[in-house]
Length: 264
Image 1: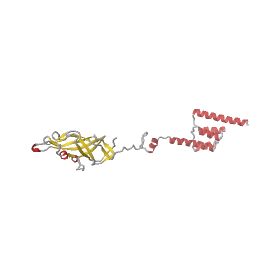
Image 2: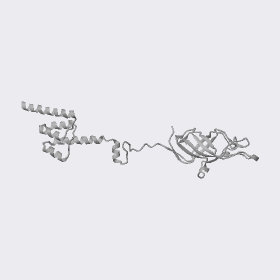
Image 3: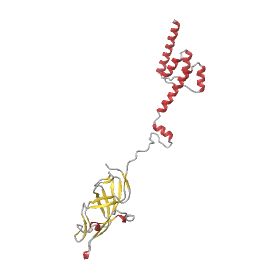
Image 4: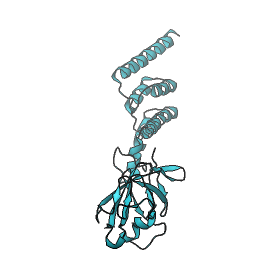
């Protein structure tokens, strides 16, 4: 009995020493370590626990398994070794970054770059023919205006698509004098016409025209005959010249569909 107790104590001492050394050096268990424990007489339960408690680096090839069996390793010991290697592979596959797996499946993906599509920016279509309420920013007169002069306007009311604002009141709009004639002899009245160009909202330009229905293509389709539009009342002054005061309203129309982002 004393001999058995001594051998058991010796086995535990050797096992403890082995585990201590392995823990200090952090050297993973190998096939040779398992064979040494088998030849030293450790029971299979103890060897299995040692395998489960330590890092491992086992050779699980067919030749290596045959060699283990020949060295006396039992099937539970070999099973524990195989399970340890399987856990290592599972842990390694779970630790692969998402962009690395994407790169492996997509040869065009760049390392460190997400391959998911960027979030699309919501845009709203401002339809052709939409009414745009403007007002003149400066005084105009057929007496002083000349063909080609710029006409400065501003948006009088927020421009919306449904309930979404795509252009705020005060946004700048631009036109060009297309015809200007001052009043003449024999009571001839002055004439003043302009061509609408665009409304600026953010980084976008909304092309404008002067009539609700599209009248042909190109610049001529956007012309506005101011003399006819406003009539003589309050406009024909100083020898029947056409006079337009700052703040006078003007209705324009969107010339073509355009996608615009919402404004906050």
